[in-house]
Length: 298
Length: 272
View: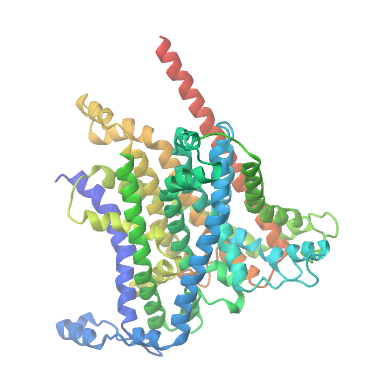
């Protein structure tokens, strides 16, 4: 192996090992440690100067106590379940909002499509934080939505949306909408129009042609979009902290508070490890879906 | 697909884009509101922009953010391009699976986990938390996005061009510099832009790895926004939204012009 090749491989490899993989080993180690009032706030700490004996006593002090603590305290498993529920519901809601938009884009004329594409991507480049923030003024009790609904007379007193789970749903749908639209649009755009014509010639109504031909062929895009929304939504921190209020329990927020407010590093690390284990399933499924698509395209 | 543009499509597009853009539009409009009460219109005023410019804390946070974004996206582009090259070109080597796993994992990792993990690393390395640690963290998560963007371009790249350059006596580095790089340059540039924007935007990871003396703009915005809506934040948001809008639109116009020019060149070449 020549030196140049070695340098090319080793530079990014070493970087990722040091700054990505080793940190996770540390998280794992601290998750197995005990909370202590010291700096750093956990024990045991590895004492390499004691040699082999030091390593042995270090390893013997690690245990799964924090994980059994997570399983015994209702706060944590409720937070995991509520995150899973919120992520699942908002994925479905995002799909319902995104599909008609992607469909409309795919049916628009050739010259319009690049512009529509750009309009979908533009919000993605805009700060996530600002986009979430923009909903505070709309959803709050004296916000624009309530003002408007009161003015039209549809409601007689303001709806309480802000600081509830409903606001979190709105925030997730809004922030992740482009991630759902783009893969569905990509699937619909490739679709061969003659298939639909054939279905209609054979006596399908427009509606049944959609459900029998168009929709099944767009499913790979739908699946990709659902994963792209579900995976980040599960660990979401900004949206529940800005829009969800104290009503919304999500695991990303619990982890953050465990670390910064309670300063319990071992429990925060254990929360992270479990979240990671939960995420592995959808991530592997997503990779498999992508792989299948790539092979189908070749 | 059949291009039958119906009323249904027009309605869903109108409603969809209204949903995407109305919240930001309201934000922009109300940044010019004279009243401190953000939901009551009290006449046009630009005073919040003035107050923003006089706010030292915001300005210094903006400076830190910009510095972090420029440095980290540039280093991330170099590392990410190298990583993409390794993924697509280096063939088999020991630990390749782990390598590609480490490239894709940060993209799907929840930011709270990445942030926590990096902070714990910096603490065990004994690094002082501050601008430097934010830069290290940003390089790490953005280089993965760069390498995905660049490797998708490298995959479609015709390798025989490079081989021709090598046959004609180029050193591998020269071949990379004068053949490969110009061709993948658009992908490298969009990778840099993506890394730059991600770094500008990042709140959660910075929140974890930043020290008490280093505050980025998103961190500043977040702590202000937690207290509720404020017209100053609206003004700041408007400035950021305008920068992004101008940037994205001009980038797309430039790429459109380049494509048109390329087509014209090809036409000319064919006619000769």
